[in-house]
Length: 326
Image 1 (spheres, rainbow, N blue to C red):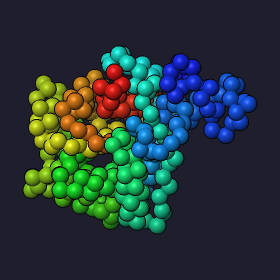
Image 2: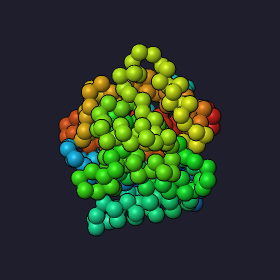
Image 3: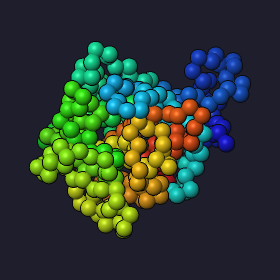
């Protein structure tokens, strides 16, 4: 069932403000939910008053097999309108109490991958500064968009080194791929000098990436097949993460039976509940400063993966604000 506005819930009523573009005298009509994350009404005011900002970046340029990641952010937002606000695990409704803003999509230059990444780093940095202490959740797009976001966050924290938790089927440690270092396959290689990267769920890598990881103290690889025996991998990942963490979640981390809608699927990926158990620990034991979800390539006529990813996005927000939401 889709969420319907609850007049008694903060920020959900029709009496506070009409939907965008609707005059006040028509505000009481049964309009659809806003085309924003979770269908939440837009809240005006300075961005630094928001708890969460959702930033769509529908960028796609260097995909190497299946295409369609440019459609991912919109599919996630549309599916999120059917996610129940009540979270059974947490026994609360984070979406009803948090100020969650959905920003317009960033349309990056088409002058090339490198100029687009430079433009994104500058734009993302300005959004992060405007948001202040709020939680910035970026929705991609291909995985190349994560590098500028990570570098912008690393710049914000100066000498305090950032850790990156990379949930992914691939290491993305190629120095360049198909002629560009701004490739989705090079996303983590671009940030190793500024952040420690802990890759979890990996199962499709090149010899080049293995050699680079072994030569770098900033890279930790945790293989998907090691995650099925017991939960020791969780301890290994947490020990490798520093106090401040940026979470990048490539949806091909999941087994294709859960999320088949991605350009480079790999068998043997993560499952739902084990993944949530780990993510909740990360948010409880580390300061997750920002996150992104990337590489959803929607399949026409198959909405389930879009909904899975939308629910994941809501889980990240809920875990980030567990205390406040509860």
